[in-house]
Length: 436
Image 1: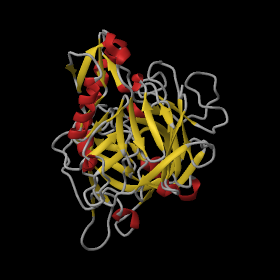
Image 2 (image 1 turned 135 degrees about the vertical axis):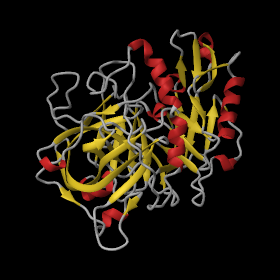
Image 3 (image 1 turned 180 degrees about the vertical axis):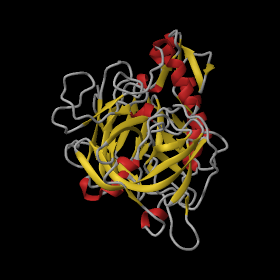
Image 4 (image 1 turned 120 degrees about the vertical axis):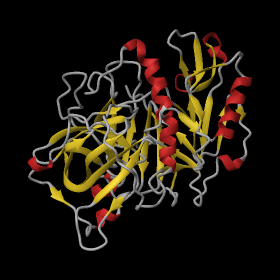
């Protein structure tokens, strides 16, 4: 069965208990958590000017190689550390943000939601190089410290503990490929909509370096022991889903569902694979790619799932455009070019741009998985120049210096779908849904 997605780009997750009296309000029954664009009307971040949207997309897509390199570093180790140097922070991310409250009384933070990261972390008061919005642990009645004797400390990447005795659980991490931070692991209440999660362990950031650290922190939805699903246990039963809406309107919303209640009853699924080399990532078995009616001929090793090397295909919320290993991407691109009249030029990250008047003959790209085919309409496989004169294939090759051999299905190819992650039953479900 073919599943068709439409639309494009990056969105923010906004949880609100307000009544639906404005475009920014959440559903009145709180059954869903509203999703809004990170630069939309309901986001706290400054939107670019309308005429600069394409440049914004190109700029965000240009950071994808750093993102893919970062994903390649997420190997199964916990003792790595990174240097920290204070630096001024600006928003330079193409992600989603979730509106949460931390502490008692709750302090509002717009945290990036990352399906390929486990830990949560927020900038704390006194942070060097952070934005003006920070979390103040000292004003929370439910704040608690975690020292090196606690199990959570050894579960965080980059932890540093004294060889003798006990002390605060400090850790350093890199993020996005060009940034890093230092933090202390603490615990406090986390509020998502009407749900309150007590004693949630997260990092309290004291210093940042680089431009890719989310200004108000990050909430990890990965598969590790400190992720949201692991720490909430039976509350959400290891299940969540999202539907990302169309980019084309200033006012729009999708939804995030946490837990098995309210998930689609009729949804096609494909196995969710676990790679012990990179256990936090959501691997799927991509068996082939078609361009039009042609199944692209490619060496199976570029699609193969390999636990020993970490090779395979992942679903990721933080990468902008889908990235394939270079030989695989080249085969897709070459077949696409065979079916579309040239000449071809480049625009930013996109190397297959052509006269938009030829878009009518552009072929459909289909991803094949066991149990389902994901068919991309042109709105999700093409991007247009500002003048509208050019259309470009909206995919690219992974950076050649990445040895992880990862294929990354990015948020562009996930629009207007209900994508369900079911860790309990080791499956990912995909159902057609208009998210607007």
